[in-house]
Image 1: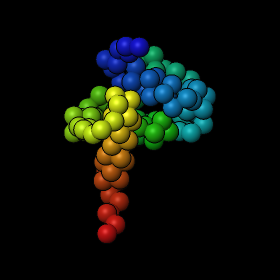
Image 2 (image 1 turned 180 degrees about the vertical axis):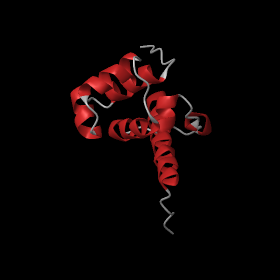
Image 3 (image 1 turned 45 degrees about the horizontal axis):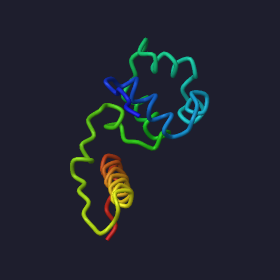
Image 4 (image 1 turned 120 degrees about the horizontal axis):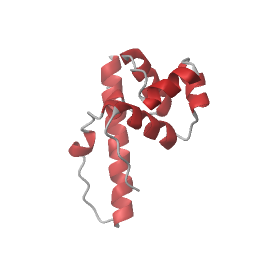
Length: 113
């Protein structure tokens, strides 16, 4: 299925649906009202950086994913003795791990040795 993710509102909807949550759930998780989320998702209201961070955290994605600026996928290359599905699973996990690392870096969480 091809998804057109040309703007932040569309990427928010996509991330919410990928997370398997409704607007009502997202409102509960973020503390934003459901009507506010509806206006954000329809593009009739701009989203603030704080709101974007709350939405990203609730959906389990990075703010960069919602802004369309995440380039982690370009950093991940998989090679191995797996089938195509196995390679995709490895790549997805690596992107997840790099995304978590990037988010922790953004939050200023120090590395543990």
